[in-house]
Amino acid sequence: MTTQYQQMIFVNLAVSDLDASKKFFTELGFSINQQFTDETASSVVISDTIILMLMTKEKYAGFTHKTIVDSRISSEVLVCLSAESREKVDELVERAIAAGGTEHGEKQDHGFMYGRAFDDLDGHSIEVAWMDPSVIEG
View 1 (cartoon, rainbow, N blue to C red):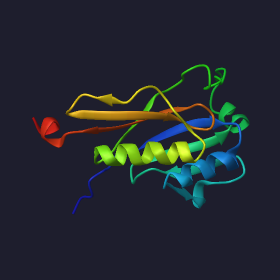
View 2 (tube, one colour; view 1 turned 180 degrees about the horizontal axis):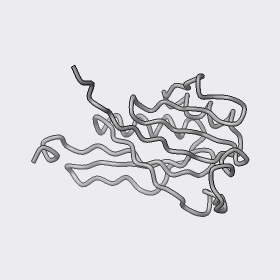
View 3 (cartoon, helix red, strand yellow; view 1 turned 120 degrees about the horizontal axis):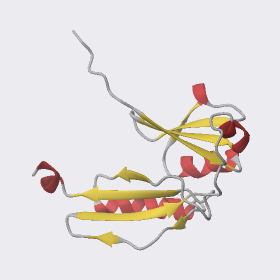
View 4 (cartoon, helix red, strand yellow; view 1 turned 180 degrees about the vertical axis):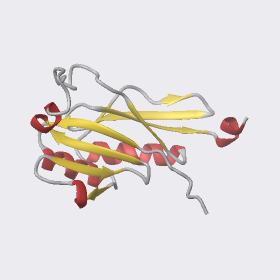
């Protein structure tokens, strides 16, 4: 019996305060994989296939020769997480705000698609979106 390969995504983010960022993301309901966490990096489990790697700026710099942007004033990536309902979109964004994040932009309500966004403690923008499954299925 062959096991189906499930591709994963690892989103790497440079953070100013690793402990504060870990606390922020656990307050959103995500867990920390201690196996891949130390004083320079932390593995935040978003789902079975999505991992957020928080890294100190010094650790992050070891993976690139490019300048690390200040994500409060520049955008280096825009992450969008799916949600199972409109209510789950609102729930995650409200938890992010309560944990010290800030709402990013306006709510997007297109009927079949609904989304909001927040910035984490370092200004990384994360969108959360729901799309009507009947539209996705065609």
